[in-house]
Length: 86
Image (cartoon, rainbow, N blue to C red; front, side):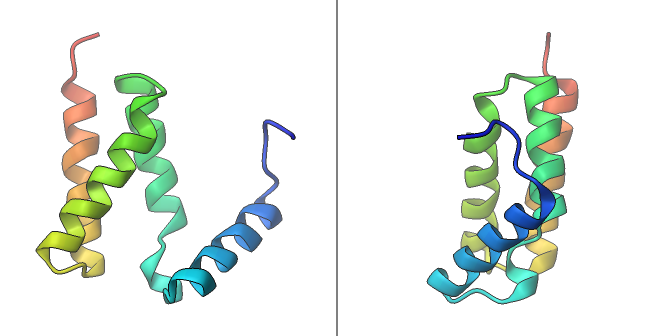
């Protein structure tokens, strides 16, 4: 198992997730999720990144699940990570 995933493999994995879960292309915003994970990993701790991505998805889903709600949840968590004490 490699530590780094080439972009084409990430795209294939995202396509497989979309197919398995019945999601559309806009339902899985890869760059938004990766940016959120990076913000949290740098601002809080690396293990907080997947937890934060899950929380953003959960919050957005409970709010209705629109792309705007996903972006709002991710932005709120990124802002929290930016102000998190180091």
